[in-house]
Amino acid sequence: MKPVDNRLLRNKLNMETARVPWIELQRHFAAGSVICIADSLDLIEVAFQMSQDNKAMLQPWIEQQQVARATDAQARQWQEQNAELWAVVCSPWVLVQQNKLPNKAAHPTPSQSDNPSKNSG
Image (tube, rainbow, N blue to C red; front, top):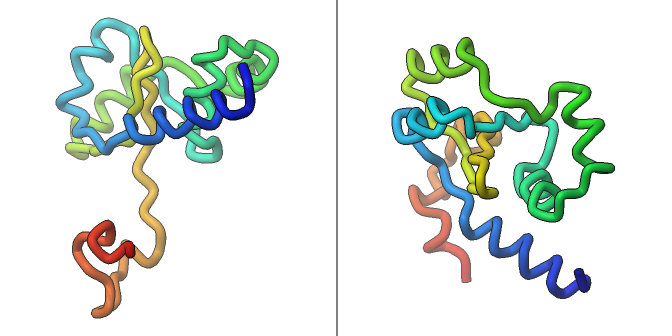
């Protein structure tokens, strides 16, 4: 794939990524198609590498349990917490990652808007 095509695919994956309530992901979990991505990895990069079937990049992540099927314990925890996860589809998989709120989002200042996208020029 050409570098421009790579960039377009990464942008497409980024645009298709959203925060999704766990309750909406449960049926995918029941089908065995939810893959949990460690917080230390970039969700879009993992989705990109999966879409390219790049085993050389994926294998170390899998071996280190940084990319793995979601477990029953994780599903229970997300259910109890009424969790919202970052998710992106990389068919046939749904990749999910815990929400990580930056410090600014956790403690907004009066100058921060509720909708930062409206503030971008």
